[in-house]
Image (tube, rainbow over all chains, first blue to last red; front, side, top):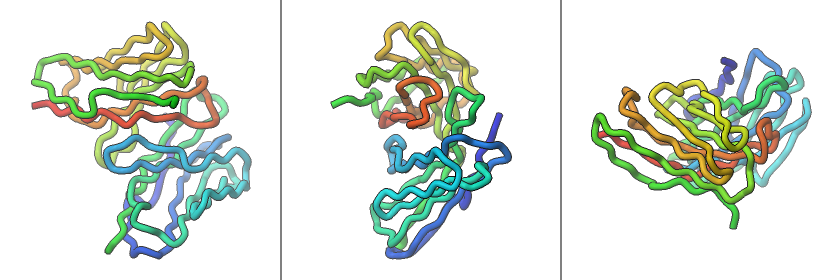
Amino acid sequence: GQQLNQSPQSMFIQEGEDVSMNCTSSSIFNTWLWYKQDPGEGPVLLIALYKAGELTSNGRLTAQFGITRKDSFLNISASIPSDVGIYFCAGLMNRDDKIIFGKGTRLHILP
Amino acid sequence: DGGITQSPKYLFRKEGQNVTLSCEQNLNHDAMYWYRQDPGQGLRLIYYSQIVNDFQKGDIAEGYSVSREKKESFPLTVTSAQKNPTAFYLCASSLHHRETGGYTFGSGTRLTVV
């Protein structure tokens, strides 16, 4: 099946640092989604992107729909302890009937 | 408040036993999904249902079964044929299939085989 390559797999950062992660594919997607999963809970939708080049913010989070429609990026500014968790990218293709998920980026914040 | 409820939160099963995980939603969503999550593997689709009385296999359906007799409910049975059932199971729903607004997830059930 189709795959989304999400990187990095994990990140260790200091509180207050900015974070960048991305998701790439060999296929074109019409919708990109970013989810966050807290430990022991289900993922929660953070940002949805619907148009190539679109840049959308949600508080300290900013996500972009790549121009080629084959990638997406998520940035977190001024990280805080509650940002810890797993961030998943997800995409929806035109011909598919279900969302495809990346394997996630696990964010750790050092004290 | 509308939402999606999974129960129980933790489940222990002896080898060779079948076990059923519950998933209920009151969002009036047509589509429902079951995912399995293992460390480092991301979310893998087990089964999904686009509408009542219909469901399709996902990427890892072997050893699992589902039913969709009611719109609100999509229980997952982990059978004794599933060789490595210990995992975190997530149920999700969406207004309809190919929902560009994404899925709503439950809080998961952690299944441990003892």
